[in-house]
Image (cartoon, rainbow, N blue to C red; front, top):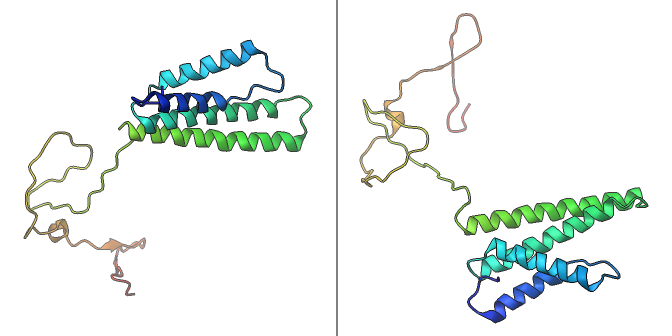
Length: 176
């Protein structure tokens, strides 16, 4: 349940998760048991693979329970406008925290969006550049002594909006 091979850790995570449940002022034993079983079922459903995932799973459960309690309190008919605004604000913050935790779990599991930054592009005379997603392996070659793509770019000028279409000078290196 807690993602560990050690029972002490798994029991700690389970206790923390079930301890984050708000039962109300006078809960009956059946309701407490029902919510504890539901919480442990959620932990089992998340199926943590390691201790870090176990901690995130318990935090996901706690943030969800806290957000739902704030939403519930905001909807109480006798709630003042100020109380409703405060509870909805807290619920919103807790919901964002929940989304951030879920994102962290997905990133840890390798399901997060990966970002690739291309720093240098070399296009040789007669060559073509591809912009988009490319899959498959390739061979890493040395890029020494290869000219940059701008070396082969045509020298076109920016055109102005006037009818004669005269060239407009472009500043470079902070000079005007």
